[in-house]
Image 1 (cartoon, rainbow over the protein chains, first blue to last red):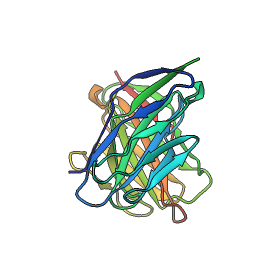
Image 2: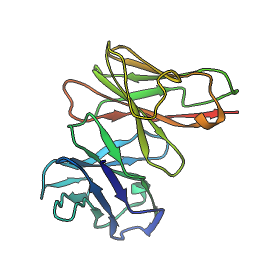
Image 3: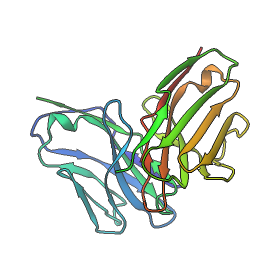
Length: 112
Length: 115
């Protein structure tokens, strides 16, 4: 079946460091790929998405490129801030937004 | 983005009792609502999908009689955990999507603890 595997956490970085959170997937169809972020005490929010191969999703300085050849959708940010501390979830959907399959989440902590 | 609320945010109950969790879309009409369960340090697992006015579609392995889902209006869905047991303790999250959206909007979650 469809599944998402993402980098195990927790991840702790210093402010202004470069961030990469790895995400790979398996899917029977042609999925759309998503990154969600969950700040403390809040619900999941869509951070960025990509719907076809080689698409790059970007938002708030975060980027991820849909790599079909490596079945990956790694999340990157060039310079993290303390306010980026949160749990990040990689997800896929094969049928639009109607059914999401999530990775296990990666907790990111940024120290000043 | 659209806002989804959940109530209560946390609940503690005794084994054998039933607990109802509400999920509301505050500023849009939610034609579809989803219920997820999240165990500590694990991913969100979809439990069921409900369309307004229709019976919910449950994922494999989810007991329909234990997790009752009602989606009676375009702004409200409820999940009732019947005869709760300690193994039902978990974090329950709802999400909603509407006709004008192609993404799901998530509630903040409800922490259920069954003693």
